[in-house]
Amino acid sequence: MKETESKSITKAEINELPLIFWEGPVKIVETTEEAEKLVPQLNREQILGFDTETRPAFKKGQYYPPALVQLATAETVFLFRISQMGTFEPLIPIFENANVIKTGVGLTDDVKELRKLQEFSPAGFLDLTKLTVPLGYVNRGLRPLCGLLLNGRISKAAQVSNWARPVLEPKQIQYAATDAWVSRQLYLKAVEAQKLPSGD
Image 1: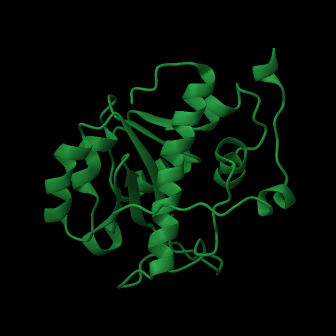
Image 2 (image 1 turned 180 degrees about the vertical axis):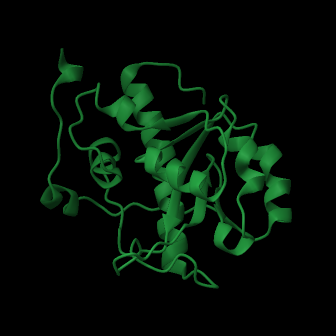
């Protein structure tokens, strides 16, 4: 069957694709009070693009916890600066809600790192590879999947930067928002390819 044919893309092929990025509104959340106000709205969503960002460690033995949690709806990307908030406790109802799909790449590691900060019972997290691998997509990273399914290239220029800095740079904001947005878009594309109900 055609839909199980192997589909892959090389780095060179990705670099030939047009750059895509989130151009809609971004809401940066830096206090628990702001987060608590947003949670009821986000908890009514059916699909959220999900990602986290962590300050990179360059020395042996160095460790930094996740600094940012990104959640994308169809209209807005929310950046929760948990390094500034000191907690992600307001987000736990979303993380434990099985009726809200939180989708992205490498979610197991993201959830594991968050649970080191504070324990919760994850529900509704869906790694995109669970959908793309059965469709024959060989590549598993966010960048190649964007190339294969969205015919676009996302920038990784801000990936290795200090996500716990007092004020995020514009390039960091765009990078973080784009990662969450494309995670949601990839889910919708993969579901469409599988001819399953998308919930959207």
